[in-house]
Amino acid sequence: MKVRTKHRLIKDKALLWGVCFFAALTAVPLIAILGEVLLRGYDQLSWSFFTEPTPTAYKAMKAIEAGEPIPGGIANGIIGTMIMLGMAVVVAVPVGILCGAYLAENSKRRFAQTVSYLTDLLQGTPSVIIGIITYIWVVVPMKGYSAIAGSVALCIMMLPLIIRSTEETLKILPASLKEAGLALGGNSARVMLRVQLPAAFGGIFTGVLLAISRVIGETAPLMFTALGCSFIRWSIDKPISAVPLLIWEFFNDPNLQELIWGASLFLLLFVLSLNLLSKYLAKKWNQ
Image 1 (cartoon, one colour):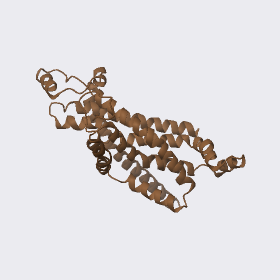
Image 2 (cartoon, helix red, strand yellow):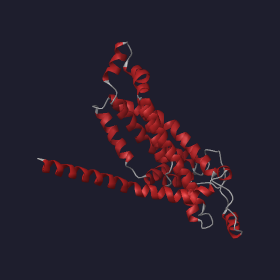
Image 3 (cartoon, helix red, strand yellow):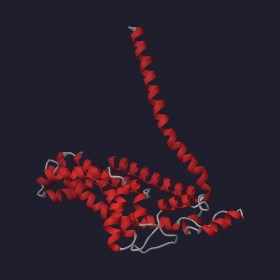
Image 4 (cartoon, one colour):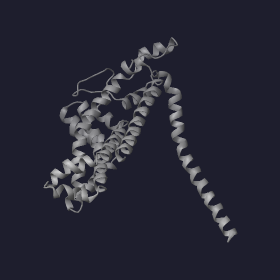
């Protein structure tokens, strides 16, 4: 018996160390990427980097020849990203929450099952396809690239994530919560809006933040819709820039390639902040 017990303990420890090793192995690429971007990009982070637009290739070339830091920054990309994200959130959040609530309450109906299937299909659609479709639906009728077209593409990509998070959060609520609301005289719609959705706020808000962090780094759909702009622009019916678009433009211009690291670091820090905020709010709400 002692030999058998000892053998089991050895197998248990070996399995534990194996799991820990492979878990650490999966973190190596992430740590390597974060370390590389941090080491190369932290020197570029300054007040001017966040407040000045992208420099021209000529100014960058002159600065490189003089041995000086490249002037300018990514303010046009930051402003464009926030404008398009803001418009996308205004549409995607209410539509996604209402759609998720419908699916949670009517999961057995054929129409709800069809919508659920289409949501899964949309979630798996490549972003470049969404960009092409948005180009046909929005850019061609408007006869030009714009922030509106970019926000439509981001909204389409955000919808399935918000729908799924809302649906799953509402499904795990206790049935007694809805029964209590109905017993007090409220109808199904009133109970959903006044009782169930507020109770599920933590999970829904977490899903919204994760949806934002999912789309903020997308480049392909914005290339077909927003196109980009080298200066700060507030008009929503004109071409506008975004941080992912700037990274792509920097990559294609030898004189601006050094700015890739600062822009990438900003994007990573922003996404990391959103993920940490979503985890904190989910934990706080559960408590």
